[in-house]
Image (tube, rainbow, N blue to C red; front, top):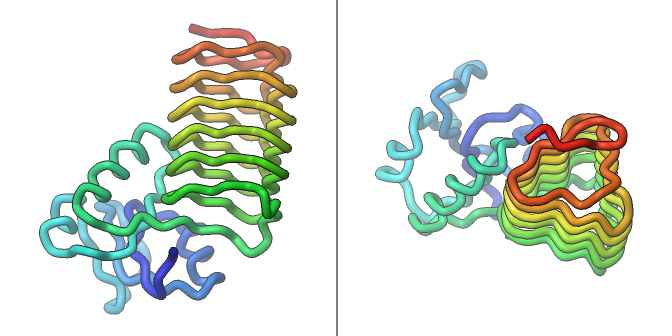
Length: 203
C-alpha cells in the first residue's frame, strides 16, 4: 500500500511525476546527485546510511533501473523496517488476474495481461507489453516498448532492453541482459548477454 507521503531512493523525475499523478507527496530524496531546485518541504539525504540513521517506518520507493542495485537496496531498506511501496500509473492496463508484488513499478501505457506474475521489485517501463501467463522474476527490469509474448518466464535481476521482443514460451534465466531491439527466439541461460535479430549470445 502507498501512504500519502513517499521517500525516493534515487531521484528520477518520472517517478516524482508519477507520485504526483496518484496523489502521493514526495517528502525526501536519498541521492547525492539530487539537483532539483531547492524545496524546503523535501528533505535531502546524500547517502543511504544518512537516511537510515535518521528515519524509520517511512514509505520508500526504489527508483534505480539496474536490477542488482534495486535488489541490494531492497534488502537494505526492508531490513531497516521501511515500507517498500509499489507505484502503478493510472494509464497502465492491468488484468484483474495479474499479480504484482511489493517494491514494483508499472509505468504509463504498460500492459499486463491475464495471469501475469511480477516478483518483488520488478520495474515495467512505459508501453511495455507483458502478455498472458508470463512470469517475471524479482528485481527484473522491462524497458520501454519491450514485448513479452505469452508464457514467457524470466528469472531474477534480468534486464530486457527497449523494443526487445521475447517470443512465446521462451525461458530467460537470472542475471541476463537482452539488448535493445533484440528478438529472442531461444531460451537464454543464467548470466548471458544476448542481442540481435535473432538474438545471439555475446557471453
